[in-house]
Image 1 (cartoon, one colour):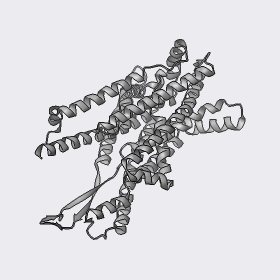
Image 2: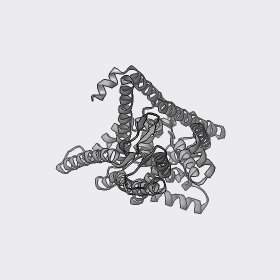
Image 3: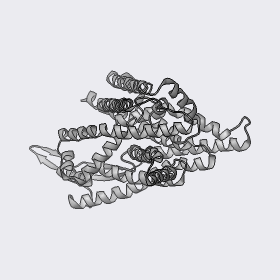
Image 4: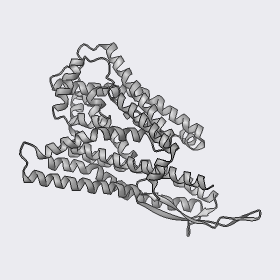
Length: 439
């Protein structure tokens, strides 16, 4: 089946794609709207000096904000506060019976949970935005630039309000994309931001590998090695995303009136990575925290300053501690996200209600235990592979001395995973419309 021809022939699907592209265009325009407060001269000096000083923190934030950090725009925090709020709500859902019941009851109660997430996002925008601006101010002062010269208390309020408006607006754009049914809108916005900045960081990484005016054989070998390893990494990401364990499901024959129903054998697919790019996004949001609180290194209290310096130094993106902690977070969030999206108890109950069973396994509790056992084994390998791919660029960073490899590697991971998700959604839309035409 030629899916691409069917996509171009389907007007409704083309309208959806055009609508999403238009929303993404608005998202890119947001990254060029500056935050009111700093003078244009200070901003220009900040861009020229701070971002060319070799600081590895700024490019990391810049790639995930779609270039908003380097422009000091209202999209400075991108969707970071919203992601943090989502994690908080999901954690509360696991420990609060009331919230868990709301998540199960109906679409209306789940919308209430989403509304709670939006409410929490607003104060988080102010908190995280304050930390980010203080971090940028600290970095700019180290580069000899007074970024916020002449900005008073009211100016700070306007800056934080602008950041909050930008994040809430991006959150709304993400929900508009989700409504079109072609993937998760939040993931697609992050995907678009990374894709917009990825060529620049790849070019910087290549220039750092070659280094200098003359190209030697060692540089060419390193470039070839990195290119091959990048291709292998992309293939591994595709393999992990598409790999699945098929659990056989049989449905008993039932007689209703004069008709016979059931007697069909099918399967339940358990993917190695059920949640796609969500673990990487969650882990990336958490890894931003140590750098954001780094502004406390200017505190007057000695123990606060020492603690901030220790966290900032230990969890710098070029340290082994950063890579180890990142590995642990990706591994943990893979399990966490999987059991949020796939609940063995609910799946076992649905199979039993529909008259189905797993051959050799009793319906009900035994099916739930069996599914839990399978999902733990499958997710274990998916989590290991995903974590290795996530930290692999940091190892390359150590060998090549190119700081942008960590950024490019994480970016490629998200771009490939989201691209596969979008393609799968498009295929599902085509198949659904083909069935509708037949009926």
